[in-house]
Length: 304
Length: 304
Image (cartoon, rainbow over all chains, first blue to last red; front, side, top):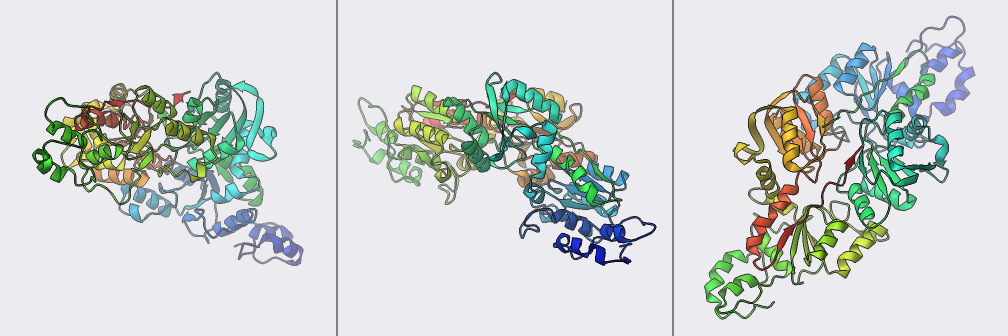
C-alpha cells in the first residue's frame, strides 16, 4: 500500500464509516485523494477491490457462495483487471498480455460449479491451467452470486442495455418485458444481431406473434424456469441454457396442448456476456489508476 | 388374468423358478404356452411386464432408482406397449390411437429427473398431461437406470447397431471405438445421417483427423464426461448433452493448450433414441400377443 500516510485522515473518515463495512483495510485511493500535492499512483490489493465491489451488494458477504478466489493472493497488488465470462486458457493469456493480474469472472474456472479441484489434481488440462495462473501470479475471482444480487441485477442490466430493452421492462417483474408486437422469427433475428449470436435453438413457430417476453439469462434450472413461466405467462422465453429433459419438454407439451408458448435457447455465454461487459463502466470509477478491460471468452461452439 | 388355470403346471415350474425371481405373479404367457388346445390371447399386467424386463437386469430391482411407475396401475391389463424417449403429450395421443395403454420411456415425464410433481400441482401443462393419462388409463414407466444397467447397456447397444459401429468397440472399454482414420467433419456427417440429426454443436476443428471415439449418449454429467475423457484419451467425444460450463470449457481449454481433442454435442434425444428403438425387438419376444411399438418423440428444437 503506497498511500497509507495521509496528511489528513479526518476529511474522509465519515465517508469510510459506511463504505468500509466489509473491509479490514482503509481503501488506498480515498487516502490518495486526501493527500495534498503530487499524487502517486493509487494502489489496490485484490482484497481491497473485492471489498469495494462487495460494499455495493445487499447482504454481502454471503455465508454461502461460489464467489470465492480461485487462484492468487488476496494481498497481491492489482496491476490491471480483466472482466470475462470464463477465465479460459486464452483469456488468461490475454490478461497476461494486458499486464492485468486480476481476472473477475462470472463462471467457474475448473469445469464445475463449486470449482472443486480434488478430482482434477492429476488432470493435464487442469494442471496446465493452474500452472499458468500460478506462474504469472494471476488472481481469479468469481463474481456470480453477487453480481446477480446487485440491485439491479448486474447481468440483467448489461443485457437490457445491449438489447435496448430497458424501457420495456415490467415494473412488477424485471424479468418480463412487453415489446411491440412482432413475430418470433423477427424477435430472434433482432436478438441475434444485438448479442452477436450465430445460432439459437428454438421450440416454437417462427411465424407466431409475440409481445410478452420472459428474459432468463444463464442456466437458472428447470424448476426456476418453469416456475417463472407459470408466473409470467409469456409468449416467449429467452434463456441461456437448459437441461433438455426440463424446460424444452415443458414447452413442447404446452405447445402440443395448444398453448402458443415458445422457447429460445440463446446459449449460456452470450445470454450473460453483456452483463460482464457492463461491469467495466460500473467498476472503473471505483478503482482509479487501474485499467479495467472486458475480454470476450466467446462462444466455444460451431454449428454443423 | 385370463390364463390362470393351466392344465399342467409341472411343465413350466422349473423354467419359472429362475425367471420369476423378481415377480410375485406367475407370468401368464408361459401358462398359456402350457395349455393344450385353442390358445386364448395371452395377457399381462403392467407389473408382469415390468417383472419380465427386470429379470434380465443384473441386481434389479434397485433400492434407489428413478425407474418408477409415473402413472397407471401395476395391476392393469396391458393392451399394447409403446417404447419412447419421452411420453410427450403427442406420444401419449399416439399411444391412445394405437390402443396401447403402457408407455415405457427412457426420460422423465414431468420435467424433472425424479418426476416429482408436488411443485407442479397447479401447473396447467402438468394438469393437462396428468388428466390425459388418467382419462385414458395409460401407465407410464421409466426404464432408464435399468436399461443402462442391462448387459450390454441397452441404449449403447441400440446406438452402436444404428451407427454400424459394434465391431469397432474397444473390448477393454465399451464406450471407446477405434474407427478408420477420418476427419471430424466426415465423422459428423456420417453420424448425423445415421441418427437423423439435423444439427450438432461442436468444439473442434472440422479438418482435424480422428480415429479414437468416446461415445457418451445422454447427459452423463461433466465430471463423468471429463473423467471418461481422462481415461480414454480420445480424439473426439460424441455426447448427448452437456452443461456449458463443464465439458465444453474443459475441451476448449484442452484445445487452447494444444491438445487436438474435439467435442460433438449430438442432442440428448437422438443420442439415445436408437436404444429405445432397440427395446422393441428385445422386448417383443417376451410378451407374445402384445404389440410393442416404437414411437419417436423426436427432437423438439429447430435451429435458427
